[in-house]
Image (cartoon, rainbow, N blue to C red; front, side):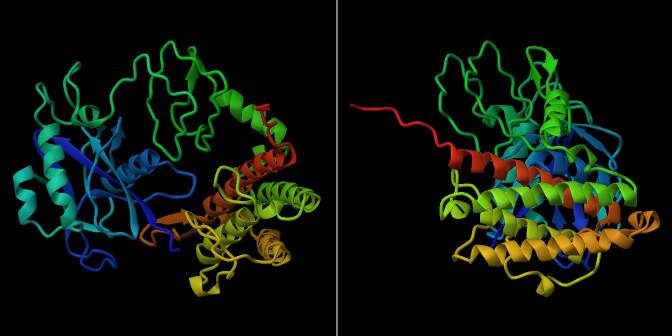
Length: 391
């Protein structure tokens, strides 16, 4: 199964007009056409975080409160996340001329006559824009007047009052800015890998995000080093996460046969997680830093959004992970602080650049986050919930 590429795009609306960018004629994908601003969602990002970053990088503006926008896209290879933006700081400019050669404001009625990247989305975009611009008190670059619901708010499910949502599951959903008042959260289980990014999470008026980070650093010695800046610091950081994974792999060998292939709540198994770590190192070190081709990726690597379709001997997977861990260790053994400052092409979007240091931070962050998931699942395998007797 081929994983769809996650993309986040934004429709900036001002005075009844929507901002589009014209993709450079030399672009590999969708050249010489108009499109919403946006780009790839990077590992560790939520769609909302990605669209905020893309608008800053490509337009030079900081968007406020992007709201999900229901649009129809026909490209089956893309996992599209669209947002309506009516408030931002700064004046949009073409901050990425290597990607776009023009940007322009259009009336909704003008869109059908344009050559666009996704023609199938134009009717739903026009409908959305007409709803967004019907608001009284719209102000240039500032959004609707206080008290007037935006289009995104009208199409959202709205308020849940006196509803019983016990047992509901929200998987890979954007719940940013959700407000809960007088709710019963007994037994609620939240997994948010990006909790440390953004405004945090407030419970009864207390921002608990820093507390969660501190507790995770306590539970996982060495995790706090994952954003080290120096070459020596990164070597120590990799040693910590590598040893933690070695301990987890040893623990998995003591479990009953088949445990490493068990999927808890239909998420990646322990074996699949190891395969994903192989892919992540190939992507962020092999391709991004060392300039290798995807043809050089390890065949057992598992990309984001994919699941193993065939059984693979667990020993082969462990060997593949060890091989790629050694690749990271060997690179860090000789890398200098000067090289860490060098820029490389983003493996998801070659038009963007990242420092070598950032690429290593991604690998370290992925290692710790997936270790947390993996140990949680090993706990569930070792200590399954007791079944309630029906006799």
